[in-house]
Image (cartoon, rainbow, N blue to C red; front, side, top):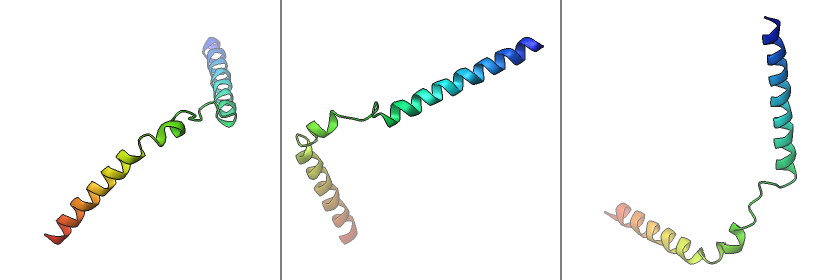
Length: 64
């Protein structure tokens, strides 16, 4: 029975360690997206076209 308590304590320590490592990685910018902003301007026209098509469709639905 005491082995369960030891394993439980070790697993909690490991989980807290991984949580702290995750928090430090997020704060240091490890998960920041540096690729998307550089290519966003290439796809901007497609986004604008999709928005204008949706607005035209909603205007048609409202008018009908």
